[in-house]
Image 1: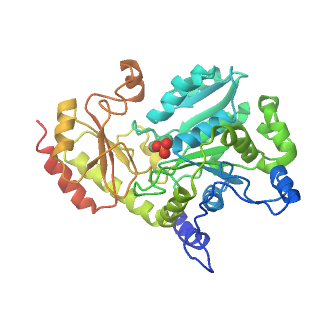
Image 2 (image 1 turned 180 degrees about the vertical axis):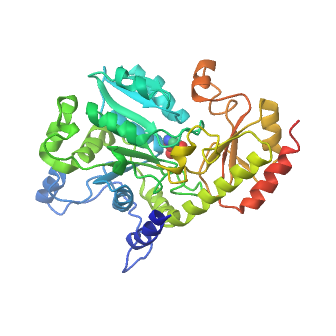
Amino acid sequence: MQKFEAFATDFIQMNGNKTGPISPIITQSAAFGYASCAEAEGIFDGSVKKPLYARMGNPTTAQLERLLAHMEGGVGAIATASGMGAISLAVISMTQAGDEIISIGGLFGGTYGFFHETLSRFGIVTHFLSADAMDTLHSVITPKTKILFLESVGNPNMRLPDITAIATIAQEHGIALMVDNTVTPITLQPLKLGADIVVYSTTKIIAGNASVLGGAAIFRAIGGEGDKFRSPRYAFLSKFIEKMGENALIGMGRKRALRDLGMSASAFSSYLTLLGLETLPFRMPRSIENVRTVALALHAAGLAVNHPALPHHPDHARFLGLFDGSCGTLLTLDFGTKARAFAFLDASKLITITANIADSRTLGLHMASTIYRDFSAQDRAFLGITDGLVRISIGLESPQAIIDDFLEAYTHVH
Ligand SMILES: *Cc1c(COP(=O)(O)O)cnc(C)c1O
């Protein structure tokens, strides 16, 4: 909880302004005037730090990027229009046809679709490994592997990957490690564990109240001689390293994805995200305590709960160690059949039925009939999607009110 305390001060102090408008300023403009031709030239060659055009960046978004880079201990960040925008920016800027990605552990449905269907259309192959398949990881790595990708917490399978061990393998082989840290901001700081790039859907707990879609990719600084990004595997980076030094990955993201694909964050979205970020350090500990309390109570009442706080969970030791007793707001309940899952969700008065997660309010969704409906039986089995699986995201309400509501709703399940 020490980490949250430090950011409580930083986020409030770094957000907004000390003089003039206290709230972050929304710079609502698509384009920006240059003082002279010489200034225009400087802005385009990067020597003058002023806004170029809103697709490439915006002052409100730049403030959000500074706070997010600070949160991760990164050299910089690129905020995007959505979490999928951030993932596609980070992945596309590092890959080309013929390259390979290795995805380890549970995977958000949208990311799975992006890797499995969209990237494969462009000749980029993804190998999907389960979080337990660490011994096979070495053998899947080839000279064409560009990215090891993982989510800090498998959604919805609730597995916790051994990020430290995976970072060691990534380092040994000189391969970029990208971590989707959407559900564990502040709790985990993947760059400090050996990751190179962190991606977020800020739509979730960072914004915190379903007010805005957004995402971000945060990059580490490029090091000196021997840095994995100076190797032939990442030859395309050398021109960025030459020009931008430790900031090369930011240049890569902006020039190889943001400029051409345009997943840029809007100023108003960045403003709403900044407001959310300011209270994140206060909301996170409450969420973490709530999900633990509810998971233990529902398990004690005989529901089939999946959460790493439970002693029988395969990753319980990692939950207590590496994850310091917290892994976001999610838990899952398995009711055995679709009809029983529907009965539970429809009987609950507290749950908002929606596809979102990590909100101030408690959310729930039956997985197989919604997000995973178009997935083959084989893909569902790999992702841990059973017929009766309900994903719950615990909110900030009173934990006793949540428990009471869930147990009441459970009496309607036959
Ligand atoms: C929601 C989510 C995404 C996608 O984010 P959007 O903002 O909806 O585009 C990616 N990864 C994880 C883990 C998510 O929960």
